[in-house]
Amino acid sequence: MTYNESMLASNALDSVLKVADETLRTLFAPAQGVRQPPLPPDAALTEAEKRHAAGLMRVNHAGEIAAQGLYRGQAALSRSGAARDFMRRAASEEGDHLAWCESRLHELDSRPSRLNPIWYLGSFAIGAAVAAFGDELSLGFVTETERQVEGHLASHLDRLPANDQRSRHIVELMKSDEAAHAQAARARGAASLPGPIPTLMRVAARVMTGTAYWI
Image 1 (cartoon, rainbow, N blue to C red):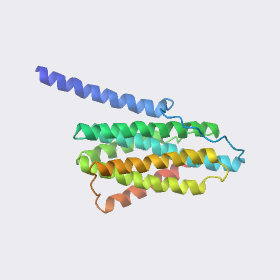
Image 2: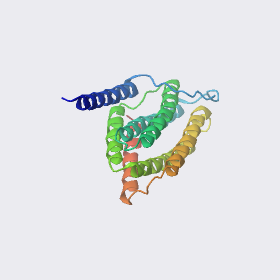
Image 3: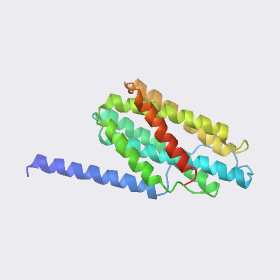
Image 4: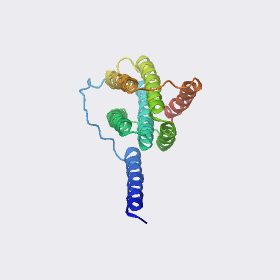
């Protein structure tokens, strides 16, 4: 094996180990956020309100697990360093959302989705597959994903218990960040997705959200 071949093999192994480490940390270690925004004080909720709020926040947590997998899958096969850095930076910012949702679930005496490994690994595979078609399409996928997530979060603001201002504030912060990610992806040259893809994305999202609410 030549020196160059040895370096390529070493770099490939490092990449695989990094992906494995990130996967295990996301799925099994407590989420660590960088930003810690002030939140409203917790309000008294009935048991039914707590269960409903927890179900919605479990859906949001599962969505953030999926976002980690998606962005890291896209970063793994990005063709340019700029696109790779963008995906990794977005994943880091989404990590704050993951920590906020996880903390709120604990406050509501609840738990994350038991299917989180499926959400993560499936999203990683989708992200890698999309990135293989080029950075412009990959950025277009980010734009459409964040657009759909923004709408999903807006619906949660309507569905959360009226006096659960703590969960509501978290969702509002997340919604603002998702809009910023979509705008940033467009500014970097995101391509429009072929017609059927957004529809398939909505169907997949409905399956995940409908399942994660309960499981």
